[in-house]
Image (cartoon, rainbow, N blue to C red):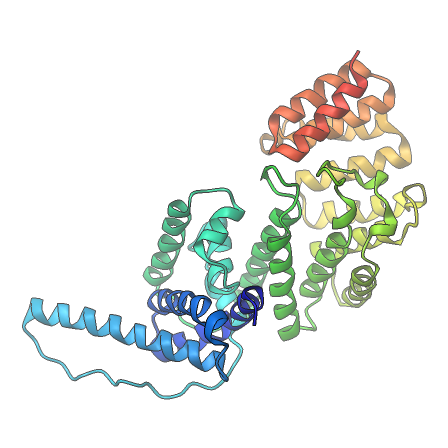
Length: 406
């Protein structure tokens, strides 16, 4: 088995092994650290010596021994400090059923005591099986910084006294929404990187889709889970057409739709229909329906913008957000003209969350260009380029500014 195959297998096994370890030993922090050590050993041994007949059992055994060694070491230290004796620890704990604890782990990693950044990092490591170095590279921070973030997150979970069980009643629904939001953030960072030279990071997008598929497999009747998976698939279907061979950004209306992944679109469209058949509408279902409307258009000119605007209007009512309003302004400009879009954009000028945001600046520049105000468009394109940390977006916005330069 090649190294990439081993890495994929390890990522698939990570939540199942970690779940078994936590059920055995009860200490999430110690178990996660021990599993990372076992995974590191596997990445060295398996490509050279071959994958064991029972890879899950191999990882569980190696990690369990390391947990036991650590517990014994800590116990011996405490005994030396207190001069007390205790019964020796059982060498091999009882076997744990081969259950899939992915959803439990996602709930644990999305604990409300953690920040969104910590929830994302811990999810990628504990459930996604990515190493600290891989996560650090994905978010363009030093490995030591990411290691400290993950360590603090595990300590906060421990301090909060979290148990390895699903919450009940309304708490379950609330925590599930946090899990979905974390997966949504991971996908967004993969699909449109917030900084760096690449427009997208396919590894993060793929990981978000993989984890969302796991959640959907366990909660197939949840309309918002279905909607989120559909949204990811429909959005990811456009990835190949979003950049030129040189890595430059290609806007939606200029993309070669023949390069869109039809298999992903068909799957995503089917999921949208299934999600909309549910008893209520949620934000992920509506965003997926918008993405499906774009995917349904053979050309940019055939896009049903009135339907897109109507969907954004509903989304704005049930989940108010300045980005939703911004996107509705784009749709409104397509149906009522650029000045109508600009008028709606002006309502965001007093929103502190949008102050100096490159998306607001770039959309305003685009609509000003459509009205013939090239001087205003040039100014806003330049400001937008300076406001984003994404090099690919900077190049695109600078090129648009050059095109309208007075």
